Length: 342
Image 1: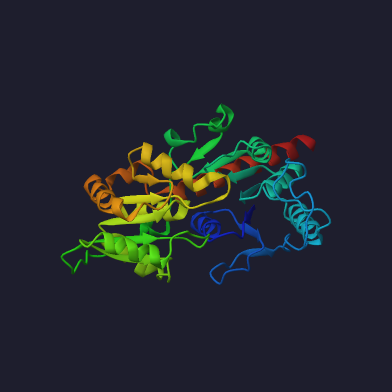
Image 2 (image 1 turned 120 degrees about the vertical axis):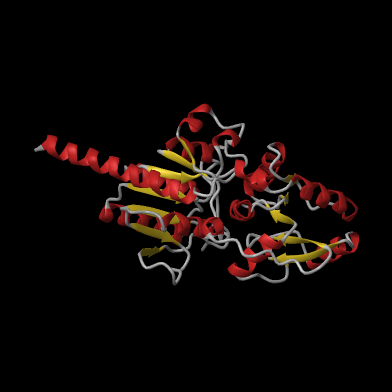
């Protein structure tokens, strides 16, 4: 059995779980504040919210953790529910995506924890404790592009599976470009964006030779429509969230990756890494309109084959295989220990 904590912020954590779980042989129980989605038929433990105190005090325990508000009934019930499930189910492994507090709780209870690694500044006290205590760090990028500030001990236990997306196994639709202009697709996420409809309008006015379309700015596109739009785009401008970047990588489209404000500078570090590796143009903020023609032309000239450095197309399968292998090893160890006792 694997326990899997899915964080409630944004859509990416749930999407990553869904992709990996579809390839797992080991049964999984999800623990999350999110309501069970209709597509999941396995076990699902609904956790109480820990955002239930109007004026929480000392939420970081003096900088040791990230979110442990004093006198929060939800926090107590949440921890108790996780501990009770671990005591009852006795999982061979526990995945956290993402929470320092849940990582440490599961490890304190004697379960090997696999942490879904995030880019950005993760060398604060809380992240150091979680990453140090983890059995493994699951990284959706290649080993040669691990963050430069990571200590060597983290590199040694990182599972670098490469980026993975729902579109890795989706057939590419026939190209459908009906206008004489090149087209650009803007992709923004559910976690918040500083790109507005006015931003798109200003960009359109500055690039009369380009046709603009957006997903996540003003309206969402259904998954099938998004895939077609990605494949049809001459250039994609995307935020630097892991899932969005993985989807552009799956489409192998030229890209400009614009970081959005996120905790710990996650997107900024991703955009810089992609830029330095020559995979995509990475920017710290949305560019001034007058810079867009050059940025789009340069991206189109670079092409999209560079994404092969970031994504091999089988990241979810590789992650699932590593988790299944860990469960098998833990099971063999427990069996040997049982035989020794008897």
